[in-house]
Image (tube, rainbow, N blue to C red):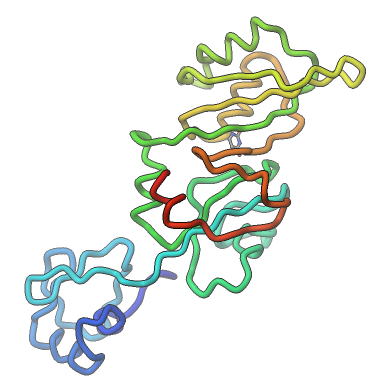
Length: 238
Ligand code: URA
């Protein structure tokens, strides 16, 4: 598995013991992984998943936590490995030494704000349905949207067997000549392809979808394909 490292390396990386002392400690039965004593030197652990204890004390993963905000272009897949060899979002983040994972996902044909990090707890917290943070999408629709359709989106629509929670919807532009509408939808949820499905539910086809904001983080300072580090303050705010 990709994120796995040897137990003795994990102990050494986190300043607990030298590599040699860590090996001795493992052989002596002083190291516990997820509640079980481990005495095999070849044991690998995933620092984001497994809980490691040495002499009864939790060994925290001190790898520096990195948070990145990317303005994802369309055509990129939100994954770290793609079986079809398509372009993946992590290809765009050059020069970062740690392994980054996307926080939630954007469809291949959706552009805009995407956070990536090596902080597994952060991913868990931010994507947990209980804390789903506000996300704002700019949507281009074929046809002219009616006020009643805006109200439907706001109140909640049926997508498969699910009724969406109340959303905020703003009309940005109606273009009668081109026969398109541009709207802004803000939701707290993150169901698969939710915005596209919500628009389908009111009989409108999405021509373009762009995530403009995650919480208070606005992507407008970054050009498509650009990224930047997030500050501690920005992370705390989320
Ligand atoms: N809703 C969608 O339909 N697609 C996305 O990528 C994000 C939200």
